[in-house]
Amino acid sequence: MRRAPFHYNRWMIILQRWEPVVSTAFPKRTPFWIKIHGLPLHYWTVETLYAIAKGLGPRLDDDVPQGKLRIDVDCLSNLEMQLPLELPSGDVLTVDLEYEKLEKHCFYCYSLFHEEASCPTKPAAVRGSAQATGISQQNTLRSLEEHRRRHDQRRTSSNQSRSSVERSKGNQAVSQWSTNSRPLLSERRPQPAHASHQRYPDREADKYYSYHHQRSPRREYQVRSPPRTYKDHHKSRARSYQS
Image (tube, rainbow, N blue to C red; front, side, top):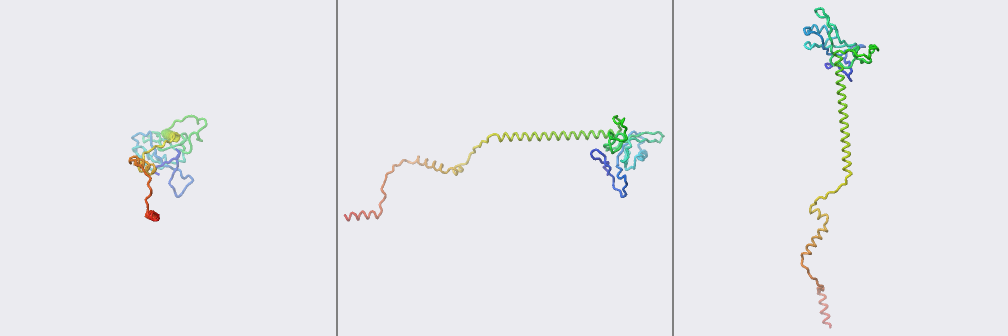
């Protein structure tokens, strides 16, 4: 609860601590830091701030040097943007109230439940006319404009990143198509000697035979009868004896 008030999609959310006795108006309060504008410096005292807090709601905290009060504001009612203050001298001074972290609200009746364009209390004759904005309204407009600008920047950056991704995909597709369209030429790599010998053993043997055949001296071959055996020699001698 220290980070209150809370909002969602730039609309205020009433978040209140649970109570054992719940009324029909629960939840209704949200703490706001409210800064006082238009108060003379010599009136920045605890008594003056406490007097202002009585016209706004229960006081939760204060920051006297900064002229700020933390008030538990009734969000079901319209916000107070100005407050008349009677000074010790008897003069009446109107101070402006700045609500910190105030998001979308009606700039006409200061309600948190609708915007000015759909305000039911604003007369139809003056709905199109511009109205003077206070400090809180100027801060809200500035916050909405910054939020819109950040949203546009995120959308632009996301579109740029998406287009860059699509371009990169297109370039990859073109490069892949050009790579696949070119004929693949096989590169002849040098092979070791033992690999060629294993793949072509007959060719290596022929080289070896032709080399040694050319280096060896030429010889003449004569037909010779086969050598005689012992049986053939015995038969020839027996034939001679018989004759």
